[in-house]
Image (cartoon, rainbow, N blue to C red):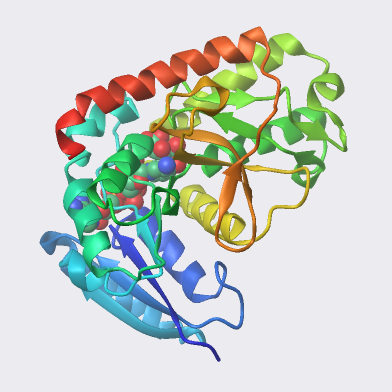
Length: 328
Ligand code: NAD
Ligand code: LMR
């Protein structure tokens, strides 16, 4: 058995934490031969609940789980961490947009970004989930200037999975028949679910579905608003599907992406596709299997997609302006 991977998770006693911790301990990110240590961070009022989560994890007797750390000190929770999952943040309630949380949640990512730089492994990878995740990721990245920027990403994989499921259902095929669903921009109501580059059984999804009005209207709108729809139905934001997407995100950025495919992930823009350099935006990303990734180049954006991309990038730029004082 190899040296354990240290996985830090913030907000570990919350809903997403409760869904994801057993799955990581069961080997769903690093595989069946890789032991893990779970390093859980919470705020003091949630430490007792976290204790209960840790007891349940112990009671699962997971063969791969070598240890559980519970702390309200980010330096302890991030100590030598190979992977930091930044989930701990307030979720939105009914009638709110994710961006409404920015001034409340943004400051969390300053101190925690600094603690990652100081205490995590030199090879750490960081994924931001707490909303608004793109801009919170930007704040964390700026707060850890010694950690290479490409180690930071934020999650639109849930949106990608939602789009894939919707297209499969509309076409009456299995989700596995749908490839290269793609989200551009912000994890918000302006995100751009791209049906133009998606394939179904190897053919253009647009041709297979044959209903542009549905694709441009109901499909895009339903992916953009799915988070709000779940909040309206459950009274709480998505958690099981978010945890599942986070596992997909981390696992797929570690493994080489099959040739000709991509995954949606929010990463630092290098100016590709006209997205302002430095913003954390969702792009088609290909992983090299050695810990690196690149933005897939050369996809043609038609006028419809370009207009929507411009709007979501403008929103990201505005979020950046609102947190300018947190960017060091
Ligand atoms: P939750 O309220 O159930 O849990 C959040 C946990 O974070 C709580 O236990 C809380 O005590 C903890 N917390 C708060 N501030 C903290 C801090 N400074 N340090 C450490 N822990 C802290 O919420 P949840 O449902 O688990 O969602 C967490 C976040 O993830 C929310 O912001 C939500 O909007 C976001 N989210 C993002 C996506 C995505 O696709 N990017 C999907 C779902 C949820
Ligand atoms: C989601 O997409 O489900 C999450 O970002 C939670 C939310 O606020 O919508």
